[in-house]
Image (cartoon, rainbow, N blue to C red; front, side, top):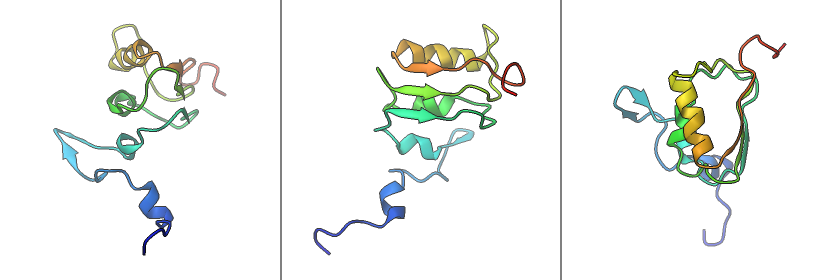
Length: 104
C-alpha cells in the first residue's frame, strides 16, 4: 500500500540477516544499525566489542557506553584494540570500569 508505514518488525530489521555467518562469527543485529548517534550498552555482560568496530555507522561524535561489561582493558588485548579503533574514529566512548571493579 503506497504511503503506508511498515510494521515495527520491518522497520527495525537489519539490512542483512543476523543469522548469516562470515568466517567463524555471525553478523550481529548491530551491523545494520548505521544511523546510531548514541548507544548505551552499560552493564550488559558484553565480552566482544568487535561488532561496534565493524559497524561503519559508528563514528565521529557518536556516543557509546560499554562500561561495566566483561571487556579486557589489558593494553595488548583485542578488546583494548577495539576501544582504540573506536577512539581513533572520534567516537565518544565510555569504557571504564569493567567487571566487578566499581560496577557494583
